[in-house]
Image 1: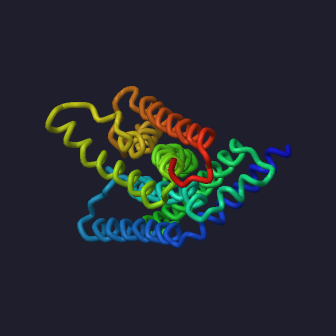
Image 2 (image 1 turned 135 degrees about the vertical axis):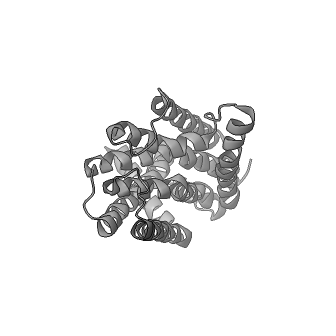
Image 3 (image 1 turned 30 degrees about the vertical axis):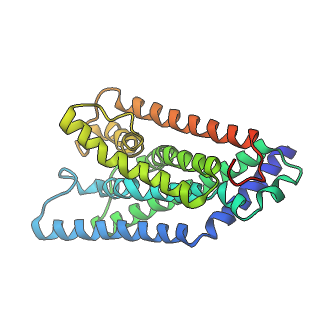
Length: 271
């Protein structure tokens, strides 16, 4: 119980640290603004040409909107939240102060990780809720809203890849800017390389982190609403494969970050 109380204290501290960064709040605002713009454009197109953007069923507009924001902005928010989680403590000289308290390094690591990830989950819930409200406002009654919690959970799980990669870079390199840039570069580079590998060389790009991070939620929804033909059906086993890839990236990244913290001198920014 005492350990859980110490971890919860670090979780609360991590929330305050992350929310104090104006770039996190700015990204949340930009994400919701982007979702609103997508809905406005989709509504205007539907009104002018009468063409549905999700098959022929506007009742699933909320799915379209949520997936558009998840594919890039949620990943970017995950990178920014995790990118400064560990490194800012070294940059500001507070890592020594925090670890001088009656708390173990494992408790410190868990508190920092869970604090950032729980905050990301709250952001994911806000984005999902906002898109449901926008869809109801623009397109009226929506279908399949009972799947909204599952889509939210899928988005949070999919964001583990870039959250954990950024968290790892934050601890390994102990520099916020470098951690964010490395994770962002991987996000952009794998997004560009993936279609090139598929189109030019016929090589599967599923091992790249972007494939699982962006595809897992849509694969899940295609399984849940397959009878409606709203989303293209995924390949057999693609959902399970994406889930496994996310888990592998997350576990490996956290193990590397934990090894770095447990075996290095925390007084050193880079060792």
